[in-house]
Structures are given as C-alpha cells and as structure tokens.
Length: 182
Image (cartoon, rainbow, N blue to C red; front, side):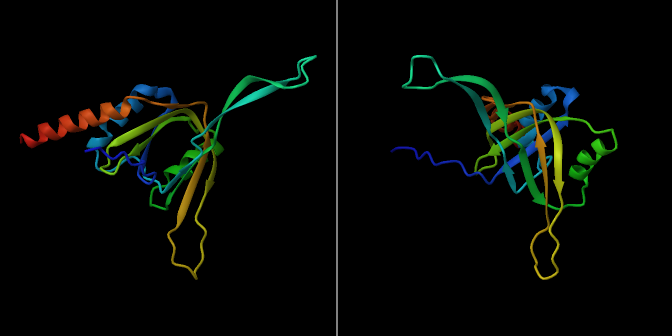
C-alpha cells in the first residue's frame, strides 16, 4: 500500500523572536522546545514575504548578437508581513514604537510551519529584522469582523533550517514518553 504524500497546509505556523544580539542559539532552543509549549510566542493568521530573489546584470557581448549574457549580482529578500487579530498585548506596536523613541532593537526570528498534528515541518530563520510598518485595524460600526493588526519588517537574510523540524519532533516525542511515565 502506497503512503499518501499530501501537500502541506499553509494555515498552521508560529513565530519566535529574540533580540538580534542574543544570537541564533536562543532561537534554535525555542524551535526545539516549541512542541512542548502550549502557547506559541505569537500566533498569526497570515504571513507573506518569505521570498528571496537574485538580481542579475545583462552583458551585451560584442560580436554575439544572438543572446544577452546574464551575470548574478546580489540577493534580495522580501519584506515579511504578519497579520493577526488584535490582542491586549501591544508588543508589535511597541517594537516599532521603540525605534521612534530611539530605543528599538533589531530582532532575529524563526517562522515554523507546522503539520496537521502541530509538529514542526519546515523552519525559516531570518536575522536582524527591522520593523518598517505597523497597521492597526480598520474600524467600522456596521461590520462585525475581527480587528486585525499587522507588522511589516525588513531583514538581512532568510535561511531554511533543514533538520530543525526533525530535532524538534524528536525532543517532543521524548518529552511525551517521559511525561507518560509519571
């Protein structure tokens, strides 16, 4: 009997942030321990901008009129935008507001895509994130929709962390096994 290999649903993910000066060790710890934590650091309803593109330079070689040569220049990363329902926590607003007051700190982070059983499947790490825009909810007394806030930030690198999901799942399984002994 063949095992079905369905595509992963993009509706189940979580975010972890830490001060950029703290390094990636703290972030990896949060990924590994995430299966053990009932409430993630932050839950969002939408995440866009997980992208990377390569700029190229055209070179018109003399005597070669049949093609234009392409050479790589620089990698650019997309702006990441996260959206969630408004909560009592002003953390997103305060992150951007800190820069307006001259006390803001860049953050390193990881976005973890979870499978249907809420186990880590894929992990992306970004570094030195700088918030560029916070948007509050659109308020309208004639609608009864959820109030949504969003934060947009730029960063200096996006890296898929291969193996981090497997490590988190292994530690989560071990923790459950130990927990069942008591």
